[in-house]
Image (tube, rainbow, N blue to C red; front, side, top):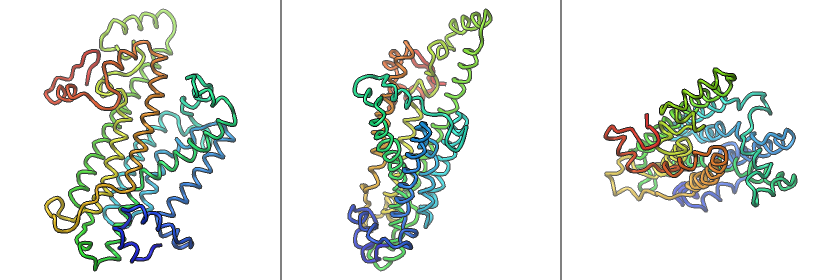
Length: 367
């Protein structure tokens, strides 16, 4: 681990040179006791295992099985004070929600290596989208894509979005080793910024739970109707088509409730979740009396761990685009839905209608 002198020198992990200095010691004890090193080593081992298993099985969703688990694991590896414990607890709540949702969709069937594969990987393998995506029909290029993007980039991203816990750990270490530094002793384990971050995190988590359940109910109803055959099925579908309340079933995709506000409420809330998580690392630099105290140093609003949520948001731009391409090819009514409802950012008018109690939107219904 770095010496207390180095740790006190550059504000406990907020500068990039401190991040690099944390890797200067290669002893076994340093790796075990330093989350900078232990989480990074763990991440690379997991990434390599994902690549090996996916290469042998042909199932590229090995990272998906771990997506909901490893960020919480990294957070617990950083626990050292009240703030890092709170962060780990919130990450665990997020983990339980996403793991359960993946489980009930069949993602863990046939463990350890089987289970549902994300349908988008098969579409990419076939080159269905055309253009440069057809390069992935080449087995060698597909293997490189699996190694670089699916296995390693995604795993490193999962570590990166959890890295505010590492920064918070750094600040906790600074409080422990630098108590004589001016202002350091005034840094509190928790302050108002932690409360704001936790509130936004829990709000986003609730939105994700609601969207998960709404989508699952819709898909179950849709599959139940599609599984019925014969004259009765024709009569049933005719009745559904005449009912405005069942527009979702007629068009083939969910567009009511949260899906009348944004097209991808799960994705939108997921991005908000990790943006709020970043602010715990900002809170780690703030004094106990923030925002009322201005005499105990400056709150560092920017640190290296913010790259995690930025990359995640960029990833969702790409994955959102891919999902939209697939949806427009499957559902004729989807283009009209795209014109009516934004992808991630809700319209001000929609939010205002919700606030004043008018939940109806043209072409859809906010329930």
